[in-house]
Image (cartoon, rainbow, N blue to C red; front, top):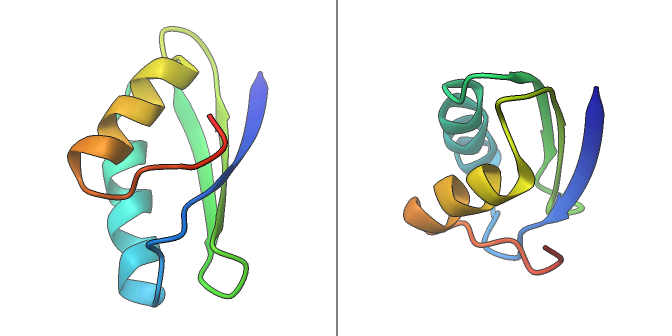
Length: 69
């Protein structure tokens, strides 16, 4: 299993974290998503077929583009 920590400056509240979690959990292979609006970070645990590129693309599509990918 891979783990990545993403910084997403557009996270401003718990609703943002909920939206991100819901969208990322819909990706096949994503096992766990933990977000924190205070640090503006999301930790994603995933296996194949999920990839960091797919995760980044989904976040970009929903207007939560990570700055460190």
